[in-house]
Length: 262
Picture 1: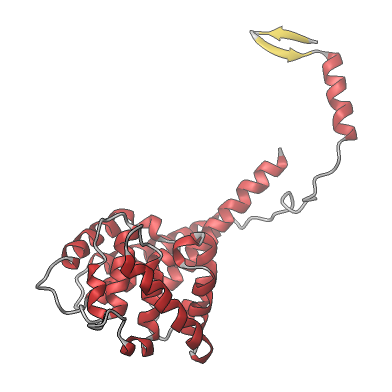
Picture 2: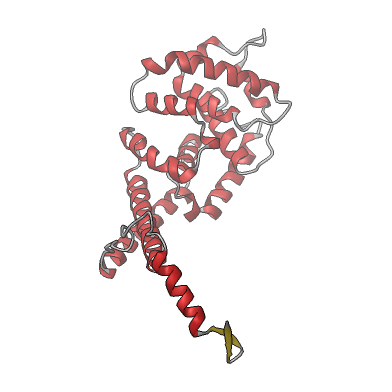
């Protein structure tokens, strides 16, 4: 059925006829011509978009590598960068920043944020996510002498949400984080309907799907709308993340279009 041409098997006339027959009888694609008719923007427009992304990317990098007055500022920036799914641009910068934060986490002389549940829990989660081996003993300070978590924490919705997310990075045998999960989840459920936006939306979604088990790219699309409602959101970072998302989406659309043409 096949003839050899320069060492490569080439189909004979009979084989080609069989192939054409099968092609004629094949069913049309369930996608129709949707991808074939994809209209890409001009190369000039796409190049302008890439230049905008690159410019904003460098601005975000400067923020990430610059000194800050408060630990929480650096933690928040890293957290948002990751949740907006643009952390792949800054992997080395984030690693270096977290290495420094790892040193302060176990520094007994650094007591500036020791009583801030939000900051302690966020630092713990970011470090654990990055693979740093850290103890959960720091959460004992948020307990009463009777072993229960402090009642005053219940009014700190932001801190409780941060604690809840941190507990999903626990490992076997960390009893305090097992207790913290029950404590935070119970009170977040009871306060969810009384919170204002965008915190209410964050709590509601977290109870269904914590950050740790979400698909980053899908979660980023949802987080855009939540983050932009935050009055303190970083406009440069948000704009960069949206443009980067759109640029990647266009690249994927082109790839699928090229594949569909085959």
